[in-house]
Amino acid sequence: MMEAPKFVASCSFGKDSLATLLLAKEHGEPLDEAVYCEVMFDKDISGEVPEHRDFIYGRAIPVLESMGVKIVVLRSKKTYVELFTGRVTKGPKKGMIRSFPICGRCAVQRDCKIRPLQRYQKTLPPGTVQYIGIAQDEKERLLRLKGGRQVSLLEKYGYTEQAARELCEAAGLLSPVYAFTDRGGCWFCPNAKRKELRHLYDHHPDLWARMLELQAMPGKVSEKFNRSQRFSDIDAMFRKEDAAQAA
Ligand code: SF4
Image (cartoon, rainbow, N blue to C red):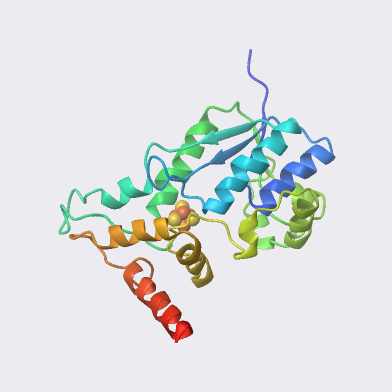
């Protein structure tokens, strides 16, 4: 007998995906599980900003499970450090260390996020519906939804990004990362904004030091952490700021 289609929510534990889960429960929408893919820095350290990771495992998952939501956690076998330290196998840069992921073509996203999710999706019954956390005011992203199979409950119930945030706040399910950023993502992301990097520098010197270690490795394809700077340039910039403030 063919397995019945499932209703599966994609979940990053950001405000839009959590508001989607809250709306599904509030309105009695069918929901079999919420799927989350955790990118890892190395075998032991999550790629999530530590405050977000603590929120996910210490707060969000227990609350959602108490509401009857099944959470599926996926992780790729590959990590950021493995991708970083992997060597180019052909072409003029053969033998060099692959180094930092490229802005706009992030190999971490491809290998550590999209692939595990695609692999998981292949195990779901045909006709499975995916709830995606796209707000009513994100018109362009809504247009990209694959009709019928991908559904935005935020659109269905008229929730803007701000309304999604308020819904999470009221439920005590707003990640603390929103205190210093408005975007989710890995703490080593080349798209990280200045204030996110400053947060990492100020509050997570152990992680900061790991990035400086990687920056110092010889034989890399590129020295650039993002479009314009080496990680060591950013480090020097923050040190200079601190010194100016202390003077
Ligand atoms: S958040 Fe940044 S580093 Fe992480 S997968 Fe996405 S683009 Fe890559």
